[in-house]
Amino acid sequence: MAWSFYPLGDSAVLVEFGQSISAKIHKEIRAAVHRIEQDPFPGFIECVPSFAAISVFYDLAALRIPERNRTAFGHVCSILRDKLMPTGDGQHAESTRIIDIPVCYGGEFGPDLGHVAELNGLSEEGVVSIHAGGQYLVYAIGFAPGFPYLGGMPDTIAAPRKKTPRLRIPAGSVGIAGSQTGIYPIETPGGWQIIGRTPLELFRPGDSPPTLLQSGDYIRFCPIGPEEYRRLRGMQP
Amino acid sequence: MSIRIHKPGLLTTVQDLGRTGYGKYGVIVSGAMDRTAHRIANWIAGNDDSAAALEITLSGFVAEFDQDHWIAITGGHMSPVIDGRDVPMWRPVFVRRGSRLIFKRPVSGCRAYLAVSGGLDVPVVMGSRSTYLRAGIGGFEGRALRAGDELPVGQGRLRALAALTGDDSFYAVSWTVPWSVIPAYSSNPEIRFIRGRQWEDFTLHSRQAFAESSYKVTPHSDRMGYRLAGPSLMLESPREYLSEAVALGTVQIPADGQPIVLMADRQTLGGYPKIAQVISADLPVMAQAAPGGHIQFREVTAREAESLYICQERKLKRLEMMVRLKLKEGYHVRGGFKL
Image 1 (cartoon, rainbow over the protein chains, first blue to last red):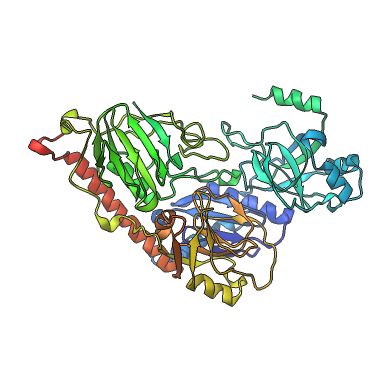
Image 2: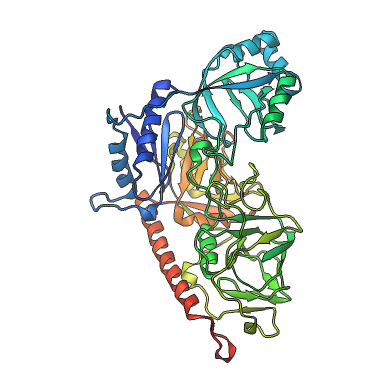
């Protein structure tokens, strides 16, 4: 395994594991984040993983830098090099979660479903069955609290972003942008093609952890009707 | 004990030093834009670093104190006035109940910090009292302040003594924070940077332009980022990058070639190429650059950036100790009265 270390300014190190999106790299990243968090070094603040990199944030003034490491960056890199090395025995065994996300496709909840279908020469039902037919790996959470960066959407339902972004996209909206799909956890402006909406709340500030989805989860989209949407929406606290 | 907001001004939010540890869930850090001014305000008010204070943007803020309070005002100079008299900044000020604090007009910088002894007593959400506007959590009801809001204040360490003020509505102690630790706010600051991860991917011309031209701070700048206008910066060959974490002070270049400096409310991950990174030591000055001003970037090495910050932190630690000592000594006032 080869890692590349880059300074992300003077208070973070970015460790690059590769330059592609792959489940293998993702797994290595999760294991490395786990090892760093289990045994944090003095000055450690947090790890923020993404598709193929981990950024490790630290408090520059709280590091204990030995003489031989002239810079804080060098010091943190040498700590991380040790921690990145898989230990074999200490591998954390985690169960893989598969989370079902009920989605009401089309209609008022998915105003762009027809457009996505037309672009790809499919019927609306065709788009839904392809979108809901797969299993998606949550590579990272970012952009907004609980927003999943997903891998695994078939290109057969890809659609470019809207030329003019909508000013308000409701929380729970499920969208497509290029060959990516995702769910907006909070109301925000955005340019994705909205094909449906989930009644589930992805951001849960009172819970620990505060998000329904976490990096490493698999999700499946399950089509539901508007009545089921309203029933589930009403059931939530 | 509370502070009543009569006018919130352009944007006033409750902030502390931010919400860390939740980046992997997509939860942004938030926190004070000018962390140095925020911390100093808290020390002067007898609080810890982590206490919540108000971040007040530009002018138009009016508030009333319903109790006697020790307060401190730091950061950008917004001409604070109580009952017609200028309130000195960067020192403890005792305000009488019923007095009204008005921020008249910006003189330097664009964000003032108002700390109250005891701190603003809003609920802690995920380890912080900072307002996260877009998610509607933290701070005061998860939003910017509005006229009529009553902000609760915690129990402070500094004793309130009405005898200090006589007939006046406030009393300011005679000592102040030394100028040498106050960030050098300027409308046209020089901001130092180190190279960003994709520095080499930009054309030579773009790299030179970034380091040598001055960039205007546009009115589209906010707590999320400073949008700058100047020579367009282009990649040698356009390409897409995988999204990865960004940091406070990351300078990213979207397709239009105009730099955005990411600030307190930056999102956790970003996909634009990063040409540079503002050094930590210069972030307080960056945070006070007002729209219309110009920024001149200057490159330093990573080692210089680190030692500048460590040196600045040492100075601040010394200041914190000095302030605590002063507060213990008491406030020398007329008639030799102490508390």
